[in-house]
Length: 83
Image 1 (cartoon, helix red, strand yellow):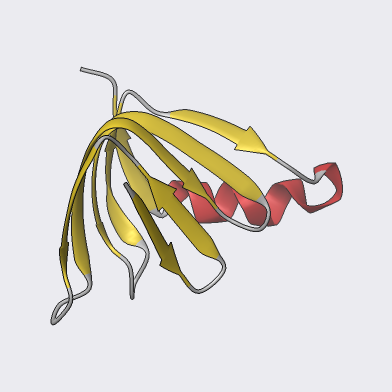
Image 2: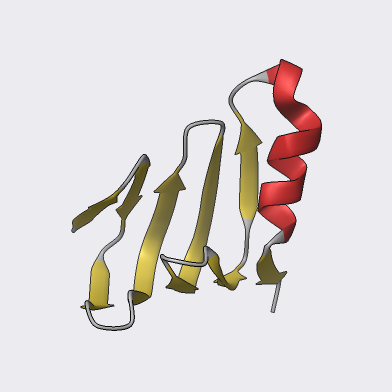
């Protein structure tokens, strides 16, 4: 499944999107691609308006090395767990 939201593309095996609140519950091969970074994991709960949420078993990739500080800040806004 694929969900486009602004410059972000969210893909996963299963997805629930609540249009009124802009919340998404995503499971299985979660892949969130943003302009400067990629987040991957197994389960994601996120509000697409605030870009705040929870990602399980996170893997993080920076696309552009010159913007590392900004990319890390964006990453920290998504709370993560590894278990």
